[in-house]
Image (cartoon, rainbow, N blue to C red; front, side, top):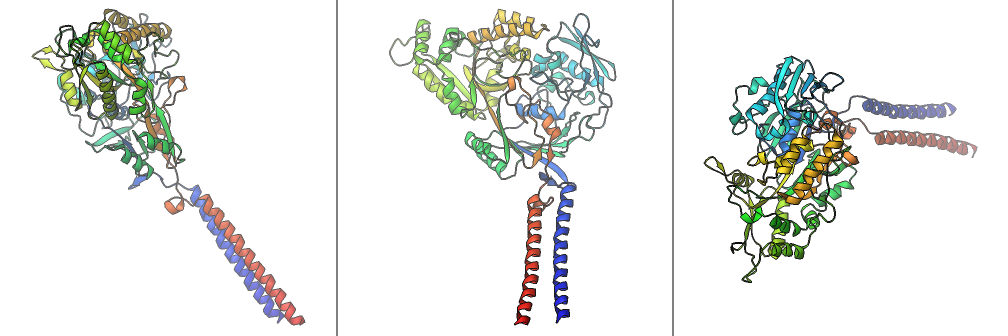
Length: 624
């Protein structure tokens, strides 16, 4: 009997040991899985790590000498390198320059007109050919000599660029160039572009994938109204990203965009509706940011005093002031921006620069505060009256005033603005012909030529744009020489032109900002355009799948974007996928390990209790 009891206890103890060993082995396996290489939590196909970003837009043209949409600049910033890559707060990111020119290192000549730049050695184009100083010089000269319109504000004052040797380029200017280090031009390969004429380059040339640049990613596919695909550049000279492929997915419906971010189809998204954004802000899965950098909504007035098909009343600054006074900018922000925006004043955005801040704000007595009655009085005093009582004011020749107001079909916020503005102007007694038009049609009316004569054919239209990083590259859009090009208002002011020439060569930022302030003040008073607001762009990104989202640094501590800014290459270089749990393809989670351990303890405790109970029961029986 004693032998049988001992045998039973030994057998039960052996079971306990085996179960405990199995549980501990499972724990060991879990820990080993967690310490190994993590499986990508991000999208993965064929072992490639894919980043999928959704946006309400797409590049208008992959050709860096034609495109002008923000999406185009974002693509170029990843496909190409800049010689200098300066950020709004004054710091700088990855750039071809190995050393920035200073007077101390001999990079700036005594007269301040020649800049000698050392570039990185060993850099290759995405087709494997070497990138040298000759390519840098070619890019600058191509833009300057061919007068490539969308980059001329950045190259103003440059005479030529010369390759001294494979890693040294000299940029020779007409005057000390204050914005030399903020000249963010995409450097293009000479062997691709050398046989392309300037006219073709900026008018008809189709840059087809794969684009050849030197940036960390390369465009390999572009399907209009579909997506842009970029793949990692194995030749990239800098930090190699963990991401193998990026898909920028175009969406026509903002609600669907937000939903596909929520369900994991997308890793990040920009342009979702305010209501959806509010929900994402409280979801711990996502990081969110509402930001503005250099972007503004505006109403453009045709001020042309030369050949024009615009209504001549718009040449009168008093008439433009009346129209500006009859716009409730706070209302526009609430309706069109969903509350995410700041009232606009000038073309240089607030909270962008620091030390100094180039944004100028009008005083209380200068500001165009919304006041319909005051606007009516301005028109009365200027001689625009309703003499026959039919509700429509006449111009000074007695003709009823009719203003064409246009909004672009792809700018939904501006369409809301247009409806509101139409209502306010009609209260003034202005007959408004409001139309939503294709952006190409608006452009055709703006760049209207009759033979060789420029004859702008519009009155007013709503637009959104993003300025250049250096304020001295944006404000000159409205100089006289830019009429028919960047100067959409066809406006001319002699003092403004003179000040622009001055600011371009002022190397002391504290002195330069004073000139820039005066230029903004003139524009605000004369109103070639009315800046309506600084809209906040809304973006959200998955922080459970990815680590390394890196905000762009803005002045005054303002929140910056993590993508979509055309400056912020860091996010794409820093992003790494986060490991998932074993059940979803990665290592076993800590929670699973805890459950295994607890289960093992419970099993052991139960078996021990059974052994003790059986032994006690036998004793009672024998004694009985």
